Picture 1 (cartoon, rainbow, N blue to C red):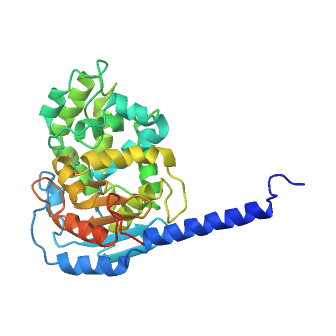
Picture 2: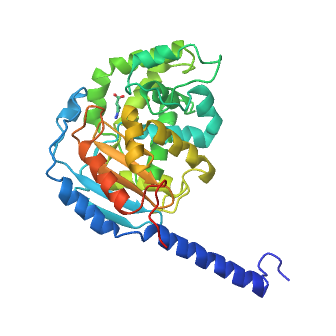
Picture 3: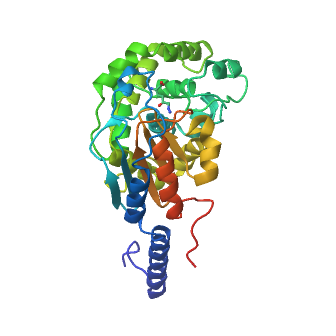
Length: 348
Ligand code: DON
């Protein structure tokens, strides 16, 4: 008797019942509304919204069409719902911080990020130097109180990606982003050049992080690779697929590839919930309950764990540096679909 394939009739019916229950609960998880209807409604509602202003501290970002508006939602079973512009790529910017952090967590474990950088909100803007000063003495003397989604922590996380050369490190970073997006991404060279010419503040942060022991060596390489990762070009569907990979416990629901271990994903989502929209993260979480991440290119990704990933691209930003239309559209769509994990839509 083949012990690995034999199942008693009872076990077979128990297994069938379990998979039926799983199928029903998946259906319940995803059937709380009509995603295409909600995506279309949000597109129509916010298309004319003119609040906010493109980021201009990187000259190339000021030139992006402020009317660009694309929405994509990808469910954990790989269904894709879209509206608006899905072709135009913007630079991923700070959204890349999530995936570089995730890669370090995947390779080195949750502890590595928590012990070296910390997973606490800083309460300061993304490129605050005062925040570095406030916690500068911590490495080696206590728990660090930074996080990998603000620049000091993000540049440090980039420095933690291992590799024998800058190219080797870069291939790992872009490879992880590619796997999460489900296609080969590339760097928008005009943005990379524009930010490299103007990133003296991040260079100062990189040097400080070396001085305080967060970065172990070669801060210049870390800042350069960080600048490159921020310049990766993505469209709304790429971003939504990346978010859906996190929603589906690390498995890209479109390609089926397990990009990171399921057990490590909740740590990534926790940092997103804590600091993904910088000093407005608490307000965002209060209204949506969704771990999310914004970028100054105008993208925001948000994750409804076990349900869907959603992304919106719209360049004009509010004072905190988060896309105005993206915040409004994601909140509306997710709340209509019962995406808030703290307030799931009742199905009975
Ligand atoms: O570090 C920077 O200035 C940018 N490349 C990334 C900033 C960013 O996206 C912050 N976002 N909300």
